[in-house]
Amino acid sequence: MDRFDAMRAFVRVVETGSFTKAAQTLQLGRTRVTERVQQLEAHLRVRLLNRTTRQVNLTAEGELYYPRAVYLLAELDAAEASLSTATDAPRGRLRIDVPSPFARLLLVPALPDFHARYPDIELQIGVSDREVDLIGDNVDCVIRGGEPIEQSLVARHIGDLRFGIHASAGYLERHGVPAHPRELEGPDHLTVGFLRPRTGRTRRFVMQRGEEQIDVRGRHVIAIDDGDAYLAAGLAGLGIICVPEYMAAAPAARGELVQLFDDWRIESMPMHVMFPPTRHVSQRLRVFIDWVTALMQA
Image 1 (cartoon, rainbow, N blue to C red):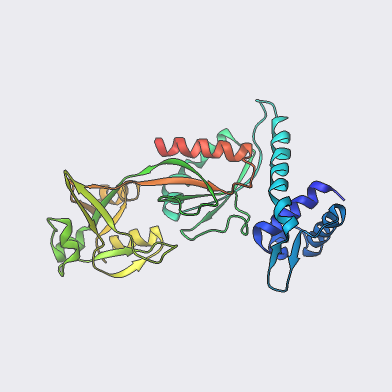
Image 2 (image 1 turned 180 degrees about the vertical axis):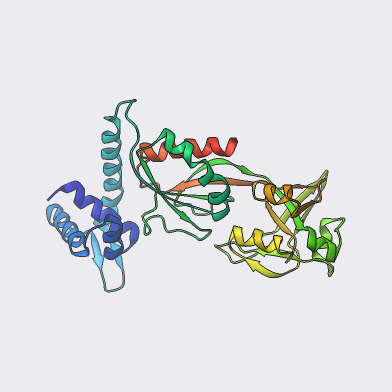
């Protein structure tokens, strides 16, 4: 028995809550993962997991052993990483998940620079606004906007997105130009709702002008949970939208979007890279975080 392989199997079963999911993330057969956990239990002469047909739970002994196993595996990864010299290039596969507008307009166009710097890193990029199970989906990190809600993840702040209120020229021809943000809640105007993935509620616009601060939800007949589709709805004249400046820049330059309420400031959105605390921060993940932070500051 390779003790560290057995410990990795045990830790991954605990993280995913399932032998099947653990096997998928480790790219092993379920039987092999089961054998490794059983061998570890036989070696320790204790039962670490209580198994039923529906769930896997830690025993009292497993509760004691799990954090020590996580620590030892992290120390092993760190020891192996420390053997690399400063001149060694980071290498290997990095799986990330990012929102679709961020990928399309910021991340992907800048990737030639990343690969010129780190040609031996293979990026696998999931593009979505959905909530990602980092352990179950075997994802190294996600980039998300807003204040971190998931306390079980480590969050590294990489920058802030500035927002603006925009409408298509066609929409403004039909409905007129609102003079005050409160008009967005009246009968003459529509907004496009943006659905928060976790709560299913629509995002509010928090706006400030001098000492005056207002919280506007807007009146909408369509709500969308994807950033690119949300922008498309605004361009189609379905309502007024609140989008990051980087998303509105090109359509505004072409005259397809018009910015409203220039004298109002909208609360910025912090952006974070998030990853599981039980994962060793590899050299490839570290350089990616540094690179995407610099990208956000550019």
